[in-house]
Image (cartoon, rainbow, N blue to C red):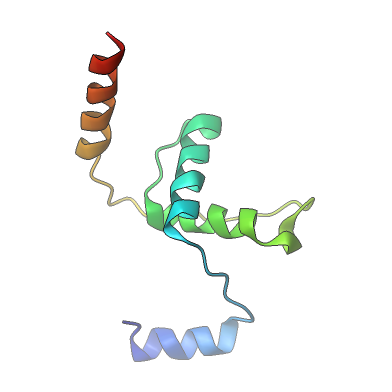
Length: 88
């Protein structure tokens, strides 16, 4: 739920909203990890997912603020350990 102050600010400042699906956020997070060697939580990956999705950004230089640092890495590393067991 968005608070009154935030909603008032967004009404004044936003000109558009880009909706992304969960799988698009996951793929953006994967792209951060594979290409940039960054582990980014889903709230940060939303920005890249929106840039990839929206054709207005194609072929253009785009600046993006990637935020969010509340990621619990335990499930990530547990999954990695499980995959390593499969490979051995």
